[in-house]
Image 1: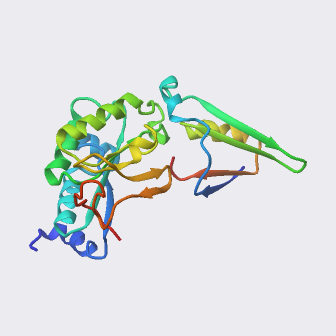
Image 2: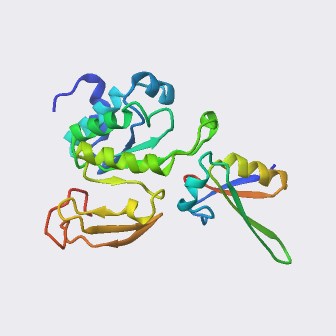
Length: 179
Length: 69
């Protein structure tokens, strides 16, 4: 694989990794720099390299009121992820006000619901909302027949109904690392 | 000053159904259990610093906190 020299570190780090989860807070360069100290382009480039190298990639986005929940920003994030691969699980995380952002409010449940629809509209097939919208937000559904395949409690597994990486209802193969 | 310890899990007192009624995240819930030897205070808040300030004012010896959630 031919990579620009700046991307060699990702290529070197990827082989021992089966799975990685990366935060993408916004696609807006100035806002991303303010939040993280860096621009979002290298994050997206790293995601693309990891996917190309066969690493299973999941992405988290904390929904920060006034930072990434308006102005079409969630649509841009979802579109960027779907453009890389529609099977990337997108974890929508409730923001809680801490430290330098203690002046903001927590993410409203309605914002989470809207973000789920934004992700689906972009074509993403696996969207999770952890605890904010109860158990349904933590389920993995078959993207073909919508049967619940993996049920989770807040911090653990309840039941994995997949059979050899396939949906037991319709037989669809499910992308993931099944081991 | 209280000693902070990070633990894997603590029970929730604020449930997701209560979030819409607390849009600013100012709710703090506490549960107290006492026996002859000690008092256990379980707290839950969106703004962890609010809860920790309260606990420190009570001069508790140890505050257990989850790293996330």
